[in-house]
Amino acid sequence: MKQLLQRAWLTRGWLACLLWPVAQVHGLAVRLRRALYRGGVLRSERFSVPVIVVGNVVAGGAGKTPLVMALVKHLQAQGLPVGVISRGYGRHGHKSLEVTPETSIQESGDEPALIKRATSAPVFVAPRRTDAVRALLAAYPATAVVVCDDGLQHYALQRDIEIAVFDDRGAGNGWLLPAGPLREPWPERKRLGLDLVLHTGQKPAFEGFTSRRQLADHALAADGRQVALSALRGRPLVALAGIATPEAFFAMLRARGLTLGKTIALPDHHDFADGGLSAYAGQTVLCTEKDAIKLFAMPALPGLELLAVPLAFSPEPAFFAAVDARLAPLLARPLSQLSQLPSVHGHQIT
Image (cartoon, rainbow, N blue to C red; front, side, top):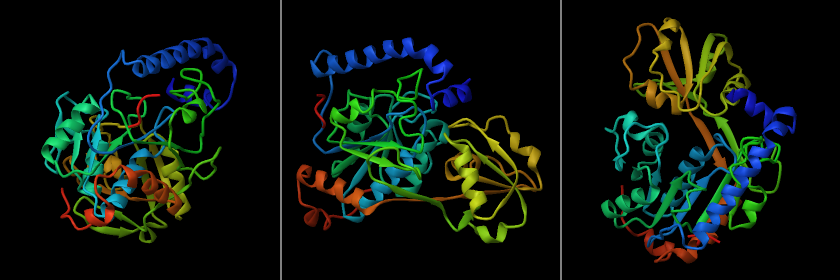
């Protein structure tokens, strides 16, 4: 059903037209909810530090987590103490907690764990993102900027900079869920305070900044050992991906000259609880870093070589310049002063 809907969302075919009346109800609900926040009927909270929200207008992943990691590293390079918050999609439990290297993936969720490993920034998860910000600032009061992974529609958290991420689907057929992929009307959402648009695909459908996505030249084993991708050419390989667009990962592997004897496309945030990899004993299995967060924590299977292939993601320099230009007036102290500090591990709704 999910695959059927995703195909339907690309055009205004019979299924999309059938669901169009339901999408109109969705649109009314979206606008009513926004009006309730704007009028103060529903409460939103502002914090003492700038909040940057990175999210999607379309349903499904579009590359926001790689952008969050790239953005955090960019700010850290300027000496800014940065913290990250997330709802922790797919995690077990509902308490607010800090994600540490010892936190189980079940407690944190895969994307917060990946962000923590990649950036070493403080990462907090909570069902309500405002609770996560509160816990983050209490534990790390020197935090200068908070980056929110997802939450573009979470208006209870006021934000200072909004960034929307789009992949090659663009806005799809331009209709709201469930007739199309849009969570909010587009381009109406852009006119209502969205600051920046970043495209993670190769064919931007409308104006916005671009980025480059490519696989690293090596894969990583659970013990940290690096294996050059060139050394894997000519070998029959199994590739799996539990991400929003598994085929994109498979295509990048093939573009690097690798032979994929079998591909396994899994749902986004797949938990691998079924232990299905035992069928590939004696083979080399390639996965994404996001999948490896879970798979490397599981007991090793005899004869199975499991390798994660990192993604090298880099927004164009003009994107970071635009972020810096919007952020500079919001900081309590100039970047030149903050860069001397030791490293520490909103929009009003209109």
